Image (cartoon, rainbow, N blue to C red; front, side, top):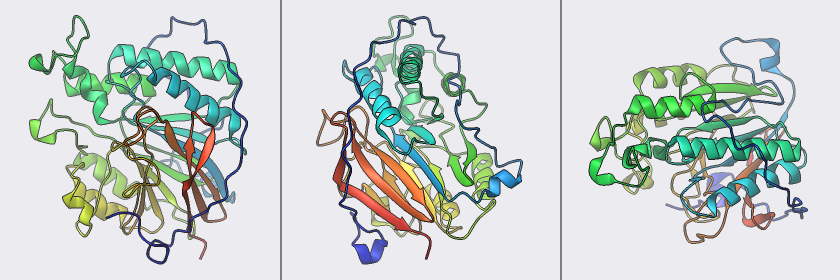
Length: 352
């Protein structure tokens, strides 16, 4: 499959990109005692739950800005923490207008307490150094279940003794403690735009056939079916986030990737309402490459990797999204160079 032509996708390549100033180097925070179970607060603008409809949910505001990064793999290499810090500083300091939200779209680390501790320390340090309180929402990826490959005593990689005394409920609870919520799926409204966050509820620890795919329970799918049709407004997109990509039965890419156990059911729900935009990670696809943007009934964007990009392992990439009056501009970003990627600039026009 690959990137469809303009006429098929209704995507227009936007070649203009703005120069930005790199953030000044800042000293790392001296706070090294962060509790990995202490949630990173959703500071800044209030994120409203769709379960309590109010006039605020039907806001007349027609703009919102957010970023999506994933596959941080915080302790996978010596450079991963630096890349994550640099990406956050670039997003907090260089983006104008300021972002309303940053999504960490899975594979934050290997789901170990050490991963969450390091993530928490960097998040607090960047917030302190930049003075920004931009809300941050994480999703769960397959690697959040990977403590099962780490020896419980040494923390060294040991697949021979998998699952190393770990379980899916324990892995999920560590993620939830970090995320500061009660379940892996949730939703919020910002400026009247609906943001829906999905996540796997099982891993190969429960069933070896799951592998690295996402497992979405019937309860989560029923919840999504209700949420995705809530407060729909003509011309206003609905943004959905899941770490693993999904493809419909009509897509050739389904033969290439099978990354959601309930792929058919999920695709049908996403196709059931207009203007769904899905953001995924997992494949580390270099922005601008084939399959980094896929048009089915909905449009899916892969956000590359903040840690290690396929075909460009030293790079750190992600997406910045600006929405104005039904027009969604999706821009690829190189966080280390603080530059836009001209080969990864897209526009979806839902105003027509």
